[in-house]
Length: 579
Image 1: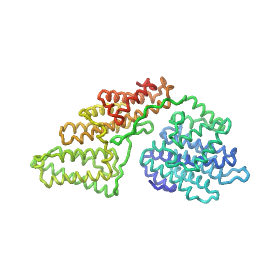
Image 2: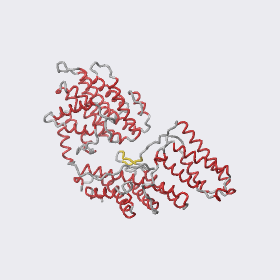
Image 3: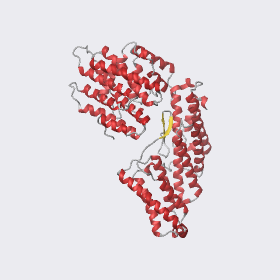
């Protein structure tokens, strides 16, 4: 796990993200989550002087909600960015009030006001991060300060409290590196057990806010509950409704200035307007399985999931080994081409060696998708070379044959250092029949076409491109007709099928999410996004389901297309206009 122990560590780590838009969104998400973790600290002041402290509570909620939404939305959403900027100023003013204003409660501990001030300040800086990513480390530092001041009335840094705050942030960083920004945004605030002080303070703060007559604080306590624990299903709050989350943040400034009663009443009205009563639970969609293509939704766009393979050896040594092997393969290919006619060397092996060399990366880390393709090519080459007959082997000079065999085994062993062989889709559970290869290529062509028709704004073109490459490589292997690479062909077939399955699962999940959010009120009122994306995704699922029924694929089980038919049937109840 990355060691993030102060704002300097965080700033250095953020600067390592090369894509500016990605860096902005990650910075906002991390700053927002840091501020959100310490929001219950405000209870320290509320318990001492509720009437005075309530003025800081709404601006803090507002800034955190605005910053979280800014991490979800693109920087092109200027309305959200402006709203976050205004929310940041409001939270900063509240923080100054807490830190500098008079504290009227006789004998109340001043550390309560200061911890609340740091909480509001962290929320302010989290919202400010939408414009300037350098604010993120200071938001995190403010959140850490809120924890240790609240924990230590003597104002001396509590090393335990500080460690808790920075350790949670380090886990955020690690969670992002291993998964995605989308996964981080939907993760529990505390990756391990929620600290006892958070549970106690939040329980007390929640009870206090809900008891305030006429202010409807449930619109914020419910919102925070599902941030704290995303497994809670609360209609209108979880699963979240993007339009509602945006409307909450974009409430006009004149209402915010009127205070909690006016703002919370407006949020309550927006919630009732959405009619988001709970719908029947949909059939489950199995999780994605390891394969060349694994996908995810980012800002309503389907993209390839990027996951670098982790090797169990030093990066420098690994890079040197890969580059040395590339050079050795080049020399071997040149030798084989020069001696081909004289020694009756099979041209297919030369071609397979060339394909393998082209797939060896120029530098590490290796992306999982590329690693699986390399492993499949190596498996095919190993099967073909190892299956040479005695007559074929006699045409080879022994030294050259041993050299090729050694290079294949070396690459096979190097891939094992990435544990890549454990990532390859298994063929055992697939029960692949004789027609599996042909059926997979036909469906792959159809799904690639559907993805291309969706357009680059909705689907990253790299997905369809990689899918077509996989289809063509499988067809090449099938055309060879050699029994010696039968197992390798099955591996390619299994990988293609699982990759298609992963795409379909994410398409189905998108439609289920929209259906659960909008329910039956959605019928006949499709917005532009659903008109375009929903119909295209529904068409793709329908094609796959019909293909599965015709080929008997759905009988194989939920690891393949067995999950699809019940999901499509459930969707028809809510999205009849799409089918």
